[in-house]
Structure formats: C-alpha cells, structure tokens
Length: 103
Image 1 (tube, one colour):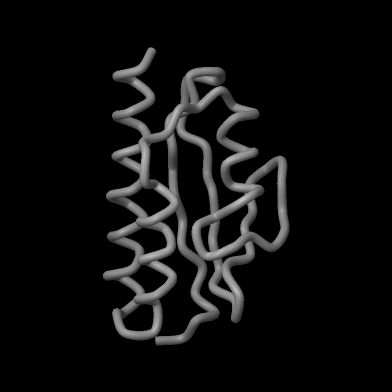
Image 2 (cartoon, rainbow, N blue to C red; image 1 turned 90 degrees about the vertical axis):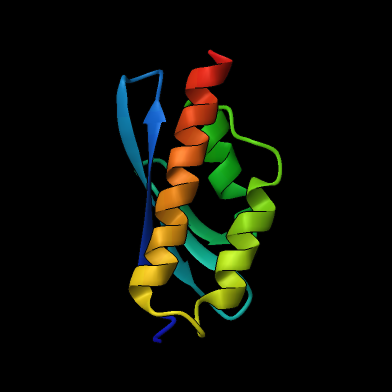
C-alpha cells in the first residue's frame, strides 16, 4: 500500500459540540499531522502536535493511545488503506468514548 495515503480521525470535541478532523500521512520517520489548528511532522505515536491539538480542544484521551497510533504506523505498508483507516476509526471512537466518560 502507498504510504502517501492520508488517514483521518474524527474526534468529538466537548468545546465545540461536534467532531473535529485530524489527519495523518505516513512519512519515513513518523507522520505528517494536520488539523484546523496545527500542521507538521510528528513521531510514530503522534507526538507532539496531535496531543497538543487534543489538549487545546480540552479533549481527554486514553492511556496507550500513542502505542496504538505507532502500531498503525508500523502496519501501513502491510495492510490496505481501508484496514488502516479502520484502525484510525476505532481509535477515534475510543478517544470520543473516553472523552464522554471523563466529562
């Protein structure tokens, strides 16, 4: 699969009352991350910008999220785009559910 694929997360923002879009595109060292506030290079687990974006939106996230995003990075070249997007979809649900449970 092409590592040029862009993967999306839609995570509920309690600050705005709707889901915000977060995008990841695999690079040699990690990801290019983008949302409406931030854009730049992050490591395999999404640090630092992805977590900075979540904190800016007052979004709580579950422990080990970084591990799962790193795992998605490791599997981009062995899974098809739909399978990798499914991982990001599940992570989006997990963060959104965690956010609802914590607030």
